[in-house]
Length: 78
Image (tube, rainbow, N blue to C red):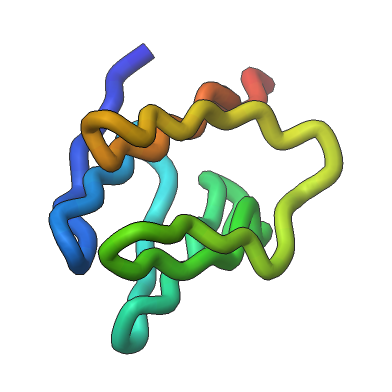
């Protein structure tokens, strides 16, 4: 698993597989997988992490002390 770290607004960090893509607008973010399907739509503020939508079966971890969001799902193998 090869991960990439992305700095987000308000000191948050997102860790996702390098094949996933991240798009942002202000403090709102969308993650796309390697097939360009939306994995998660979320926002961050200084003290909050809010998920607007997420794929069924999405496995992620939020580490509040470090303001880190880690997507644990891997791209599908062919």
